[in-house]
Image (cartoon, rainbow, N blue to C red):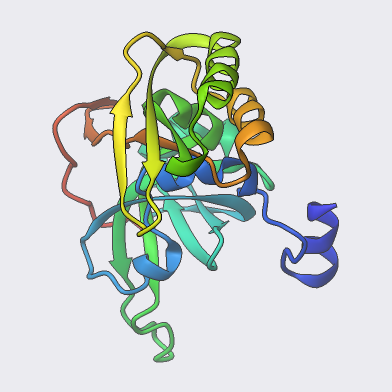
Length: 239
């Protein structure tokens, strides 16, 4: 249905393909495309979205690169995937795939006709399927009003957590009437950080009851592999 909406009207209006992953999206601290459009040339960022278009090009050395349009909840942006990165993610760059991209903001200069000045692009250092970002999640947070906490509620929570054993930490966040909160870690429980657990908890505690904690790792190109510790300097394209 979402693909039909996009084909027929040019945008999604009933939902967004990222919606099932909103908790992960918010936990990983991804920049929205609207935020990226305000960044400076050379800034580093990570984004997530759905691929809505792909074009193939050749640089001056006759190497293929791709120009991929990625859309998130706010809008769309061109993502440049140059030859060295393309080798490792070619199969992922399909229309309707949900992806996460780490890279560099590049603000385009005007072309020969004077157009394009100030239009941002995003040069990819790393591309992965969005569903694979679950490995960067570290914990789940169950949010409940403090006034609703009782033995029955805690037993229901325990049952749901025990149905999804794993390695993720669990925090319980109590909301106070004044809007403040306190948080405690449940030391006896480790869970699988997946959508099945989220759905199970939301069924009991409500649609806004679950959050994740996590962080996208830094990435640097070192030869043809990624290493930990930062980003490489963005290079100038060959074409």
